[in-house]
Length: 340
Image (spheres, rainbow, N blue to C red):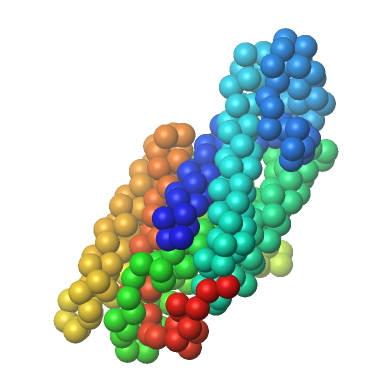
């Protein structure tokens, strides 16, 4: 069961990276219909490709951005979005079929059935949310809503973290640690999550294409147009200057918090697995910070930006693993061998 869940995590990791490339290459709106079953078959003939291209030519993104695009160029963006949707279907099958098999064979620990069923439901909702996101860019906008994009990313990572936590519980013991350390690890997890969500708004507003210096933004610590929208909170989601600045602040705060936690961990009597996980967490944080700075300075090259998105999932993984190594015995663990 652990191998199955870790495999699903790997697929979701890949899905998030491919989704990032889809966004970076402006491929996400190339498929203008949602056909969960028959959509698994791509265009096979010249007539099929012409029909798909004709549909794309009717949406605002084509008229405003890709008006000079030919059929061959269309195929290149179509395949990215097709791969993204194909991975989504594959993840659904890879999770649902073993889950039903384990359930039918009464091999599933009793306490895992409800949360894993919940994950399956969330996976279905994620497909609906993905289409809801795409729909926002088909009529009145030249790109998808940054709110829906970030929600789509957040749900993907929530599913990933839930599966990862469950898989870790099947292969790792529970050495436990003080409540203070558990709270500190949870605070880091919250910071990592907030930073990733802020990054979703950076991607959704294409804020990374401006202010391509670091640490200052156009020679200022706080960009001049930070609070130009009213009410103030609207700047955090729609003002490019504020969106990028907030992401920078959250990223710096997160790395600083992890560094302080690591320094404290060197002096504390942490269990061996927790100390190793803490070292990995610091390494992931430093790597992600370096990738983020490089992405901004080099004006968001696709390979580097995709690596930055992968680094976000890697950092979330490291933070989740660290928190899990500090996990105290749960009430439901008493029945861990019971199956249904």
